Image (cartoon, rainbow, N blue to C red):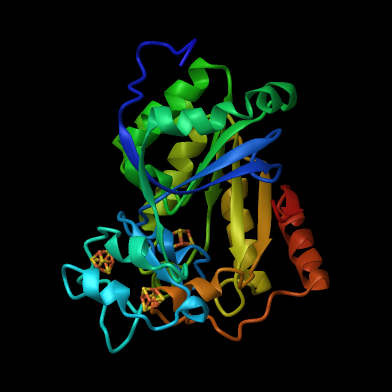
Length: 310
Ligand code: SF4
Ligand code: SF4
Ligand code: SF4
């Protein structure tokens, strides 16, 4: 790869489960979002459950399965069961991919691929002209991208060396050492604040929020530009008092004047079935557009610029 500075190691590998080109909602300009596996949270509404573990996941599309049993025959661990064709026992699966190779009806597919920084860069390079013209670049998302911080650091350094802007979508849950390593490599940080109450945060995400709130303040001092994003989830944080509390907290961060409200959607709910899991938020209805406007006004009362979506 031409023009790369020697300090970035393009041979480091990371587990990538998706790359989405031509995004205009995830940072300045036109961007490619690189989605990395691994997340310390387990949000009940997560629309990318296949991203949570730091390992590839076999996804099963039941509607394509003809019950041929090929997957069970080749499986070395008994994770694929003849009595339940295509249904994977993920606790036994070693992600070898043999079942996917023999599923000729495309009922099985592997989510997550180990890639070097150089392999990711080759994909990104296709849009280099668009990045340059629009001031865009790469946005790293997850899962929680900070989990794979060694890979992330090399990827960001390499992108910066060719002049692309760098952004992250993060929960902010990482050690200070990781934040010290990564945040200075970013032009734009989009950090989620999901709730101010730690017990409620833990009930819906699996972890308390003490470290996240502490890190929000820390990141706000390190980041060149930071925006807070709030997924608005009915039954969890969509009430006006909670949103006001998050906005008030945001207004005290250093140099942060923008908050985005992201209305709940259930677009990833079908993936739970493909992984043999239940979707706990089934039946949850997205907040109405008029109600989102009311929440926006509450955020603006705290002196912040507020955007719905993005
Ligand atoms: S990926 Fe390998 S271990 Fe997992 S279910 Fe398929 S064949 Fe079995
Ligand atoms: S190989 Fe594919 S089509 Fe055949 S039983 Fe397994 S999942 Fe179904
Ligand atoms: S932080 Fe994001 S990726 Fe992690 S579980 Fe929550 S919604 Fe999913």
